[in-house]
Length: 215
Image 1 (spheres, rainbow, N blue to C red):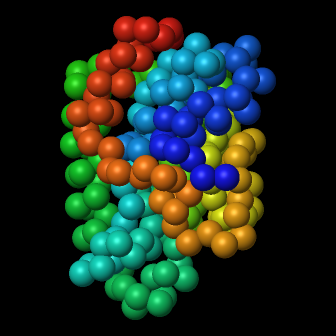
Image 2: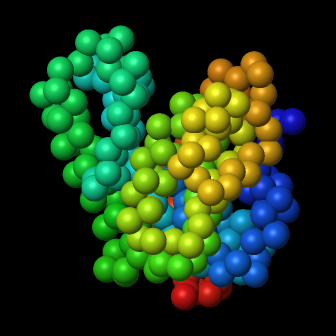
């Protein structure tokens, strides 16, 4: 199965989440691409849509090589990657500081002066367009636990089985449409995987505030 684009993936994912419609759900997307996937999910469930900002921690000089992720408040590290890269504690802290600042900037860009959607006591559905290592999703889920949702459901179109297995102890439920054995990158499972721009994220969040329940 190859998805046409993120909207197509979101529509298919939404069909597998209808059992949560009466579970007081709130949909939390990992920007940027996850917001496009999450929009049809929020529509299908008639649920509020918000963002959950997580930044990958990329190796100095090799930003595409992630060794962890941070929300600004919570940091998750991949010790195997750190060992391979030979990173020092100082290097890790410097990258974390930069990405924490970027996470705060994106909060302001996407939300403006609006407060986050309340998740305490609700079913929080964390959505992304796919995952490779699971480190970013793990950071998102661990940060979300501090807001005391009743349950956390990770919902993604595609991921390798190993990454999902490593997240089994973090999320209360995982919904994934496909777990290919020949997984190399998320983008290989989409016909159209062009970069999502900030403007599209902001537009979808504004539509959600107008058209979907807010609390």
